[in-house]
Length: 553
Image (cartoon, rainbow, N blue to C red; front, side, top):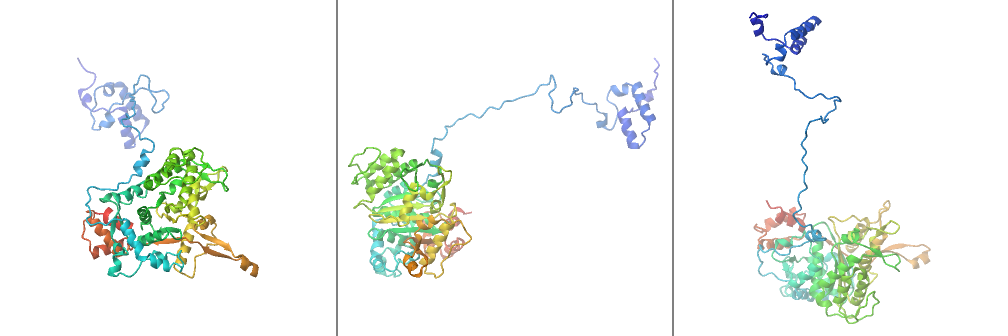
């Protein structure tokens, strides 16, 4: 049958209307006649448009359009009728473990490890016992009593009490040969210190076989002051210093000495926990200004006191008559009294007042009141009063009790000491506290010019000055004679101990103890000690530990 078209024409590549339009635009010839001819050709030759794949070197232009269902609205991501989507519902992960009990996370955060069985045991380590403390007592007590009239409230930089005579015979009796050495703590002392939460988590106790303390010149001076306060005037001391200088460890050393001497120790381990509004509180009726008690914290504090001093408290019975909200026997021990207060927070504060009255009775042992983090109690707390104003920390019953003895307004009946340590790492800044501590240090050094208040600063707190014994006293006699009211600074007997870095002798003794324990794997010589001492800011003990133990490569 004859074909109406030539076979050569059929073999030639044909162009679709789209390709013709594209080539026309590219060549610049877009006349209406060529566009009409291309449309006519596509109409007459259906094979070229709807047949098999056309011959072309450009696959993109020759591909067939994708057949998509037409939409009327033209919206994006609109579900088309008949189209199926895959929806997978995610199931929550199954709970396999038991949730932590109330207080379990806090217990893990505050857990302190005091022993490392992998560490070597140091042979010949002397213990902090009654014999060593007795040597400190017999060495200088008589000489200090003779020179106590030269202003006994001054600690003289914590070094005035340390004898400079290093004779062979005297060195064996005054206990100064242990300065620069590490002494171990007895088991009973460790248990008592753990009960009062004297050990801190960041002090590195878990690196060694047993807890030990470096004997510094300042620690010997503080121990001798504690011994003198048993029969003399009450010791009031504030330990200050830069971060990492060992303030908390020196406070621990004082508590260890008190336990060895048979004292009753009451410690507030973290003043921040008293003032950060994390405990329940209630106003005490009949107090002016209004004081606020913290029942739960007081109950826990009584339990802590009982565990730490249970050996002494079990042998002490009630000797006074008390009006308590619960009936108690007249001959129970003070340990049992603390247990009753720890059991019921509602009666914890009245029982603590009765317990403290018993400690102040005649014939009781000396008492040590200790507090760590003095900066937190020298400002307003986070608690709110009924008028929505912030409650000052001194209006909290526990803090008010401590500050009353620190200021000297109250006296310990059977001797003792009140010691507080500042915090320079994460404590709030108190301009009043910094100013008063600076003034007291300058007075102790005998400087003529004393730092004065900034006249343009309005943030000073007079209650801080009162708490540290700095008071403005109006001289009435001179005012009557000169008809002027003069005010002078009258510092009370509050001692300030400014801690600095270790001496090279003390740093070497500490590093030798680390090497004997197997923690420091280096040769301890003068060159190594001088390097660590210089890099640590002239012997800052925290920096020495960080550079020698915690930053080893």
